[in-house]
Length: 113
Length: 114
Image (tube, rainbow over all chains, first blue to last red; front, top):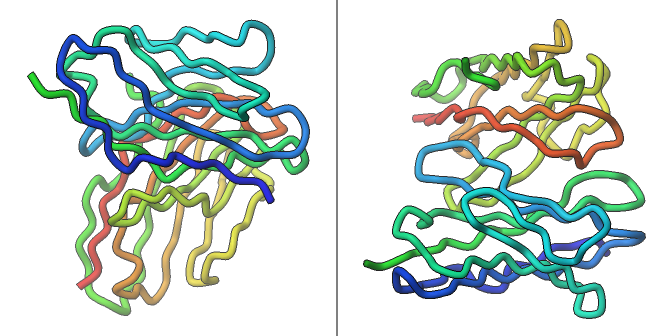
């Protein structure tokens, strides 16, 4: 079955520290992977995506994500967290068979000053 | 200019009423979506239209009826509103089919059914 898992409901990081938000997936075919961010009372915003090519993808606001095919993971990372990074982060994967986007449950990221 | 806009932003109504939410995108995209986000922030796709043709119709009560008068608009009409319909509804758009290209979201419509 196609699925996306974000194993952490919430991640707490001190400002200035590196952050990681985890995502694992299970789909048929080659995955197209996405990260979106939702700030409070706002719509989702696209951060980055992996289609093919380099496993390390760079996106908006200094975020990057690493595609790991053997571990079926696409973790979101940032070297130095900002308080303004506090938001809800969604991982999504395009199912290779029916092309529909499958969404994770979201991870709340809290950056403390 | 707002790329994907929704009206209204807030909607408070009584159970049993009928209401509509409008969505417009000025990105020139050919695919539009409606999502429901519940109180736990789970995001669930409801419908998707490509070039005004319905291509995704998830298990949604038939009280919900989308209408796409043109590629730039996708409206959502809800009949006989129920308490469980209270949620935030997001419209989104993308370019190209098959689905899965980068989606651009509207600000959301917060629906509260009393």
